Figure 1 (cartoon, rainbow over the protein chains, first blue to last red):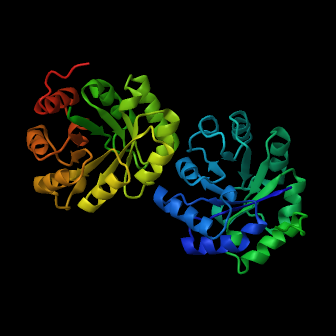
Figure 2 (cartoon, chains in turn brown, green; figure 1 turned 180 degrees about the vertical axis):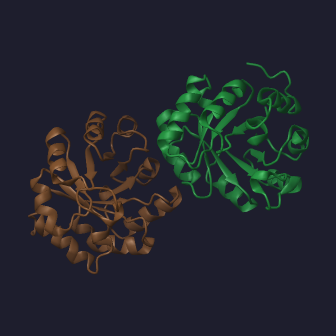
Figure 3 (spheres, chains in turn purple, yellow; figure 1 turned 90 degrees about the vertical axis):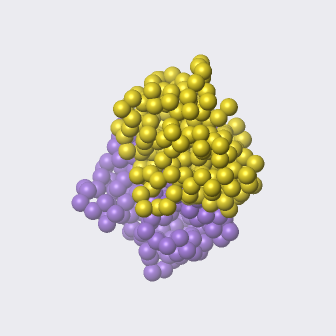
Length: 204
Length: 204
């Protein structure tokens, strides 16, 4: 089963993020709270609101703040280069699913060696979030996916029409931010992603 | 035994902070890593350097980042209003000594009710770190110390010559930042604090 990850934009009001997440969570595998400018208490409040909105704890992934993830008992954490290492987290909190955000082949190999459960690699296509930075493209994705043994989730400018190319290149899943959270119709957008992932019968 | 806490300034090079800490740690009870602008990995690197410099892990306190404290096995955490709550931390990580930074009577009572081991209250005297904000003074300290049953550590503009007044007002300890870390002679400054705390025979 291919994974669909949603990631908060970091620029939306909490209420909007929680509302959209509550509409679409049945169609996605993971919802990442990636609000780098927010303090631990605020991130915890977001998690509380997601749980109140019936988003399953196991689908919630917290960016960087491992302490918030453990205290709220959510499923996983997403680590960046400036975070604690996957190895440290796996040793101390083996029950957490650990993703590592990577931008190079070397970083992906290191994540694998350190015990990360998967990597998020990007950006694949041009995106406003990474303006002026050259996208890594499908060829890099293909090379990376062949070289590591853990799942590779692709991110960056992936619209529904890109999905099949990205999966063909070897991605085990995709991660999206603004194309869902800033969509006019988030639910149908998520359903379209699912359809393109070959899982139009996805139900719960 | 009265407690002497040192707190990093957040504005010194890591090397300077670690060097001074290595010189003085035998004379203090706790060294707080309070580097709010730094990421988890960097804070972890500071802890590693402190440990390499023979600062005992039990003396190290991490501000806000409970995950770093747990992963590195240090003694405690210091929580701010924007942190996870003392209750959450005590439930999940009962082995951590938890301090709460408070500025009002109500915050101190809440910290006590939530299971914090102590509070840091201030600022007592005028200090450059809190320019333009009226200090809370010795009377407030005295009222607070009478009202809560957990230790109250005083902070804010406390020079060695203030120490006796602060302790007489009911503080169980003092916390200092720049008066030690920006001192011309950090070691003798710390020794002077100890002397004023009535523990001039303090040795290890």
